[in-house]
Length: 192
Image 1 (cartoon, rainbow, N blue to C red):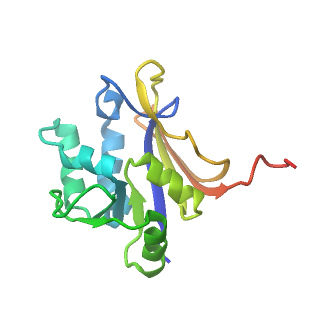
Image 2: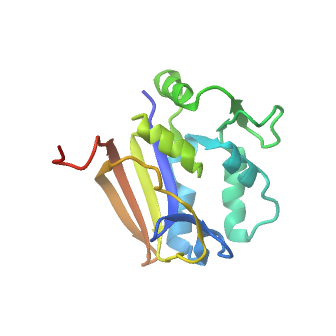
C-alpha cells in the first residue's frame, strides 16, 4: 500500500498564508532550503485541489529562492481534484480527477505505484484525514504570528486527532519541522 503524507507550512498560530508576507514568511535559510532540495518525498505524486492548482500553476516570475521550488513542482507528477477545472490543463504533468477524491485516493493508495503527498489544499487534506487515509502528517512551523494578516487557518473544521511524533528538526536555528502519525479520535481521550 502506498503512503499518503499531508504536508503543511504554517505560522505559529496555524495560518497557511498571510497578506503582504513573502513566501516562507521571508525566513527561509540555507538549512531549510537545503532540506527542500534533498526532500526524500521528491518522487511522490502531489495531490491538490482546484484553488491550489490555480495558485501554483499561475506562478510566473518568482524570486531566486522560490524559482527552483516552482520548477520542481512543474516537473513533479501531480493530481488535481476538481469538478470545475476542464481539460486540457495548462500545468505540465498534471492529471485531473473529477470524481470523489476520497475514493480516488483510497484506490491510489491500494493500486498505485507512487506514494503521495499534499500541497496546500486545506479542505482536501481535512477530508483525507477524516477518512483515515493519512499515514504521516508533517508541519513546518515558521516563527511568526500572523494574527492580523493571516489567512487560510489550517486546522479549522478538523476532528480531534492524536499525533504520535516520529521526527522533529530545527532549521537555521528558528524553523521547526514536526512529523507525526495521526490517529483520528471520536472525541477527547477519556471522554464518555
